[in-house]
Image (cartoon, rainbow, N blue to C red; front, side, top):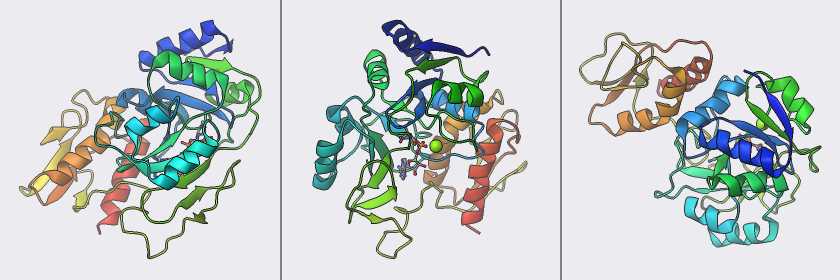
Length: 304
Ligand code: TXA
Ligand code: MG
């Protein structure tokens, strides 16, 4: 794939919006670092972020919205969360809040969690892209897995050139480090990541006051799970892949983007089924398969 680098103008934002609405990820500057943005309501588009980054695992992604009103449609805000949003948005603060049931955020964005990280960015390019798409945009830093966060279009090109269709060049970012992340999911505020904004919240620790499940940064099913299963037992809900069909199938075509996009939905479905155990058919390890297998191995190990 050829990666175009276009200066930030009305035309490049229109082209970026067209690509995003077609399900492609696009690199765009925010005030912190360049983000690799995709439509947060389109699971396959978000899976393509992981494919481009070559990240060998899933973690919850930050959802960017144009204003507080848009954030309130997606998350439940406590008084403290509202106060922080009121003083720091738009700006480099991400608030992790309970995900509203009505929100149409794809489960791959939150890695299956019942909470969501939200931020109103303060950069004209990202703000223009939010307006032009009319969608909430999931965006991790626009770098390949294992390399440092990009603060210039040239950094993005070096890291992701050939893997994404477009980089909107808005010059150097002003903050240069990723947003401060604060969780407001009940109980005291918790600082999940230090960043440009100082917030009066205790760093998150593995303390006992947390209710189980709140702290776990990854969704794991509550039932025992076996992986690489070719013949499931009668009491197992089988999640198939390709020709290895089951009670559900990650992708009948064996398409890893589709499989990644459906992974967390199917884990939730399996967890809610009457069968007491879960089995998953073999998924190849290349490309996005590495991230899928990482998530499945953790889910299997958690319950042993
Ligand atoms: O400055 C930034 O925040 C940049 C720009 C592009 O906006 N974005 C960024 O995204 O740093 P990312 O994907 O690298 O950061 C995601 C982190 C996760 O690793 C996790 O620590 C936290 O945000 N996070 C997001 N949603 C969460 C959730 N539901 N629960 C707990 N942590 C969450
Ligand atoms: Mg990052």
